[in-house]
Length: 285
Image (cartoon, rainbow, N blue to C red; front, side, top):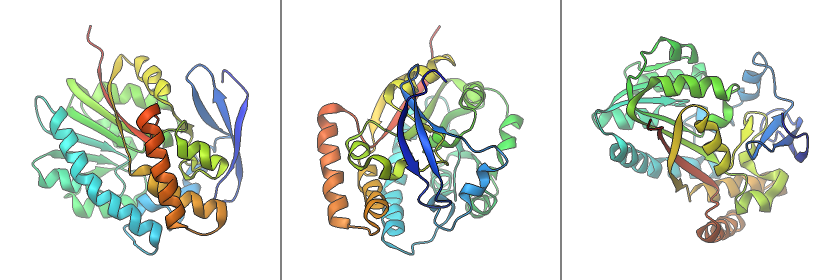
């Protein structure tokens, strides 16, 4: 680690109640969760009915808002992968959760493979995708240069060994293929507003916290280049909704909506949205 400066001390609000430091990495302009749980203990921090991407439930306002946004996002995601696919329609979705995006792509003539380490979420996903979803180890069984599009929707921040995974993903991507990565942005207005209560820190499940510089530098190490950055404007609203709960012990929809609006207005000038989608291609030689 290049720099030992602690940026924030943050609580795990959703599972353990433990506290973790966010340590600034000067080389990559990113934050690293410290200490990071061992690979053996990390799955324990996902053992909660409140971990939203592993459930299809709609029990409260936040879950209903999440699934409403997800339903809108599915169409936008499909439009995006259709726009970048050049030679074919083979899709790998890493960290696919309960499989809604894969199901939507499958119904729209894509050949799909999903990776999901959580057994319960994987079971839901396989019911929707004709058993096209596998555990993480299956990545190593896939053929090199076999996918036109590889997507990680809010997944990269969960992966313990960034360089190892990026090496694998670059190898699986066709020469003219596209890697799409969506991650939160710790430099956004809502992150700065909520500070240690910002829900998108989500320690220790989020091991890394990225800026635009971080992603560009990380993929450059693996012969890839960021070719476009897109905003995820809805993220500011539902992240603010959960952040309000962490900060004030109650969801305040009006306050969260106001902060979400302020975040997107600020980002229209700074280009620092709550989350970004990165369009990434192999570097031309």
